Image (tube, rainbow, N blue to C red; front, side, top):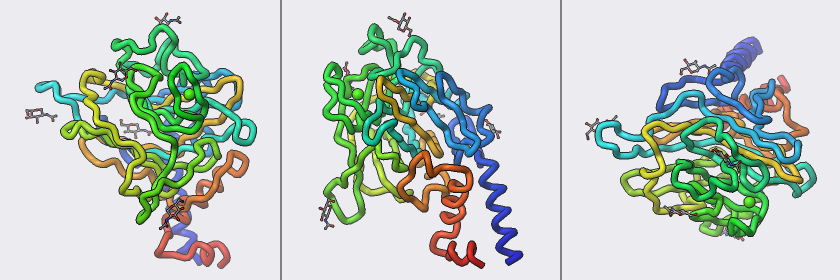
Length: 311
Ligand SMILES: *[C@@H]1O[C@H](CO)[C@@H](O)[C@H](O)[C@H]1NC(C)=O
Ligand SMILES: *[C@@H]1O[C@H](CO)[C@@H](O)[C@H](O)[C@H]1NC(C)=O
Ligand SMILES: *[C@@H]1O[C@H](CO)[C@@H](O)[C@H](O)[C@H]1NC(C)=O
Ligand SMILES: *[C@@H]1O[C@H](CO)[C@@H](O)[C@H](O)[C@H]1NC(C)=O
Ligand SMILES: *[C@@H]1O[C@H](CO)[C@@H](O)[C@H](O)[C@H]1NC(C)=O
Ligand SMILES: [Ca+2]
């Protein structure tokens, strides 16, 4: 029992110290507790006491931004060639009313952390109406969009899209995810409040961008969206990476649980916190719950969690 208690407090310590390491071109947040200095927030976004990054709450027509504090070098400064990058994060979108909310969130690479003048609602906190489509935006985003806006040609109210300087996506697909051994996409409701694991990988040599989704921390071999693109004209030498979310007349709470980013390499899935993966809603969430997921994740396969709690 004593040994188990020691393990418990050791894990508790690791859990509370959130950021394991960070370098300018690589970082990982297993949760956002104590990450305040390294994450720049604006709009309604906040880091909750339980370490969950909440981009928006149920306030109508609001914007939430959270960007990594330091700019990241996206190009070889000698040759001008853009680098490959990889990012992984877990998110949840919890609508105000069951299945009714808005508008979505986007992983964002931009030349500023503030995205000044950007609008809420269908603009996802990324642009305003006059900026749309302008090359000078230098915005690349992968949107997880829960409201269909005909002016942007949205395919439905539950899609993943690649946005370059505009909200009219360059490519989009209905949200699905794959399980091993089945090439049929599984139904996925972005605004179900479920914790969803996402990977975004850009290969600057193949000129290919892939978005992969899962309900667990293991990465399926099939991506949901694969798009041939040269991002080098969009990226400047240094760019900021982060997230943007917005609400409209109807709102959703948009959450990020953990996030990793790596230049020229494969980002790791942030934390065992995502291994034990069940339906999640805001109401169930609290620090204890997160810790339960984390600890259960650590003992996955090697330890029986139930014997740990019941002994
Ligand atoms: C913030 O990042 C620096 C390095 O950029 C790192 O040394 C520090 O531990 C990080 N702090 C937190 C609270 O994440
Ligand atoms: C930039 O490119 C040059 C020439 O190919 C190479 O020697 C150098 O290592 C590259 N720098 C980085 C940071 O990749
Ligand atoms: C749109 O945002 C830009 C800043 O990016 C700002 O200069 C411009 O005034 C904004 N336009 C409107 C109509 O708000
Ligand atoms: C992306 O779409 C915009 C229009 O929305 C277009 O101007 C741009 O050329 C497209 N870029 C790529 C790489 O397809
Ligand atoms: C693959 O997934 C689809 C959609 O969920 C399901 O209908 C089908 O039975 C699955 N096939 C196999 C072989 O598991
Ligand atoms: Ca939309």
